[in-house]
Length: 230
Image 1: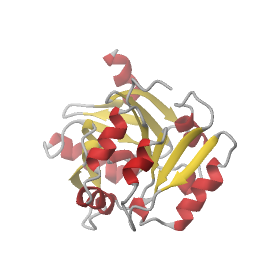
Image 2: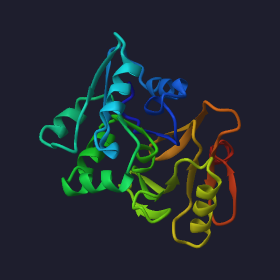
Image 3: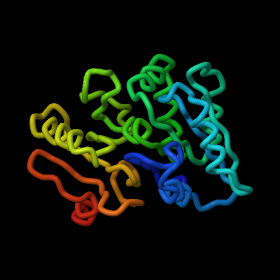
Image 4: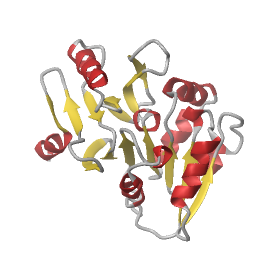
C-alpha cells in the first residue's frame, strides 16, 4: 500500500449501509494493495445504529479483512490508537451536523488529519463523503439545505445525492451566489477517489449517474474536469 499518497473516497449514496451497489464497496477495497488489511467503520452520523454496524460486518466478512467499528457516540477513549492502526476508515451516512459536533467537541479532527497524513485511506457515504471538505451542503440541521463547514482535508465544497434535482440546483445556486466555493457534486451510486486533495477517478455503479465539477460559470462531468486538469 502506497502510504505516500493521501487518499479519500467520497460516495454520493448507496453501498452496503443501503444494501445496494456492491461494486461501490469493492471500489473502496480496491484502493488497498495488501492482503489481510484492516478496515474500520464509524457509524457516528447514524448515532451508532446497530443495523448499519451489522450490515458492515455482513458485507465485508472475509478471510482477507480485519474488521472493527468504533462507537464514538458513547466513548472516545482509545479512538486515536484505533484509527491509526487501520488501513481504511469508512464513515457511514446520517446526520452530518451531529457527527461533526461530536468530532469537534472531542478534538478528533486533528486525529483524522493525522490518519490522513499517515496515508490511511478515508472513505464514506453521504455524511461520510462530504465531511472531509472545506464546505458542504447538508440538510442535517433540519432547516432545509444549507452550507456547513467541514474539516478541510479537501478544499472547496461538496454535496452528495446530486441525482436529486433540488439538491443539485441549490448547490449550483449557492456557488453562483458566492455562498460556497466551487466544488463537486456526487450522484447516488457514484464514488470519487481523491489523491492528495485532487479528484483523480470517478466510478459509477449506476447507469447515467455521475459526479460533476461546478463553479460560477459551468457544470461539467468531473471525468472531463479531471482530464482537463492533467
